[in-house]
Amino acid sequence: MKCLLCQEPASQTLVKQGRFAVRFCTTCGIGFTCPQPTAEERATINAENYPLANRIATYQERAAMFEARYRRVLHRIKALGGKGRLLDIGCNIGKFLEVARQEGFSVTGVEINQACAEYGRRTFQLEIYDQPLEEIHFPQHCFEVITLFDVLEHVPDGFAFLREVHRILSPQGLLVVQAPNLESAMAEHTGSEWYWLAMPDHLLHFTPRSLARFLENSDFRILKRRTWEPVEDYANNVIATLGPPGWPGRLFRFLLRTSRLVEFKLRLDRHQRWTTLRGGLIEMICRPEHPELADNPRRKTEGQPR
Image 1 (cartoon, rainbow, N blue to C red):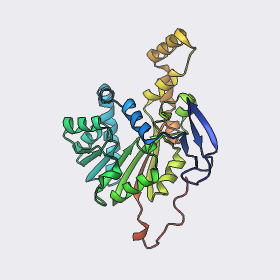
Image 2 (image 1 turned 180 degrees about the horizontal axis):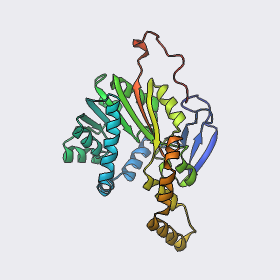
Image 3 (image 1 turned 60 degrees about the vertical axis):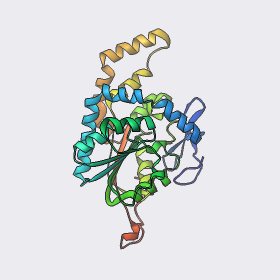
Image 4 (image 1 turned 90 degrees about the horizontal axis):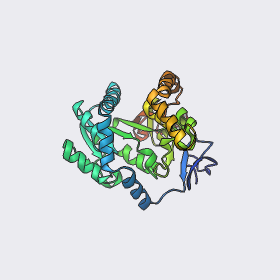
């Protein structure tokens, strides 16, 4: 496969899961799932991986944690001047939209899983579209904030997708992107068993450098960047890779989980991981660039990997 950024062949195989592998461009730092599933295969994968009952259970089991997380990101958005109409693409069952509405935003969602979209409409009385973004044809510049939580890695043509996001986002609006970090300590420690590789569901695999370049090449200027992860998820992923096979391994992992030693150690180390961009998830907050409206018609120094 050719790299989306530099058009050179993705030159290195990082990890394999069954018949799928992550090929990595050593120039740009972006990974690609090979072979890429077809559109029909992607639809089947989505339906199998994200059944409505599982999504509801996930939110109910950790409701307080999710609400606190959502309020923190909304406060970061507000601190940068974000307000008004908010579009959450990949909105799942709509819990983030419900919290955003409580925080004063006028909210709309997009969710291609029709069962989840219908649940959000029915349960929270939300406006949720269940078609792909490009098929909805929102008016130009109609949202002040757009959020993409764990979405971009699922998109086969990320540049075309971001062009549509750019078109519908206000010139002074904010785009918030979250994606798994291929250079994270979590990925390094767990290798091919890293939960968030998720092949072939995840088509693209980003590092902080490659995600920044991907966004900048799509005419977004990055205002804030950070990495982080839920420590419990990191601990569970690490523990799942430890111990011998069979029942001795299961017993060993059970004892580790109940003792919470791994989670304690990871909590001690997380500040260093996050400040060195080695957290499991990348978050970037961006503003759209409009070169045609600027005095200088085209940036010469921006758009480089950082």
